[in-house]
Length: 86
Image 1 (tube, rainbow, N blue to C red):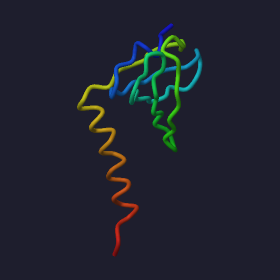
Image 2 (cartoon, one colour):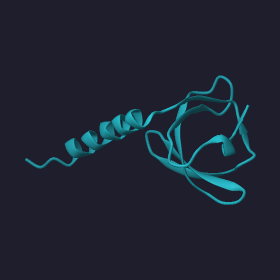
Image 3 (tube, rainbow, N blue to C red):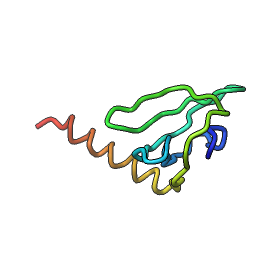
Image 4 (cartoon, helix red, strand yellow):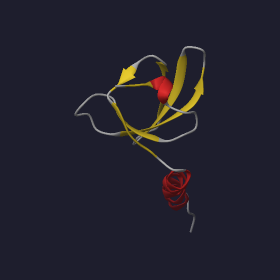
């Protein structure tokens, strides 16, 4: 089991909340003494607070800086296509 305190700020992680769940891409954005603000990248991005001592099943992978940049580029290109004016 992993804790939310195991996650580094502004780093992308692939995690499983519970065994058998789908894998989620999350990014810790800020922290307080006891909590961490998580950005979950999904169809619609969502932010939520978790206690640092809350547990989840597994950190499946940590994205490298290059992988994180590649991920962000995928959606920037999608946004550019959406707002393209002819």
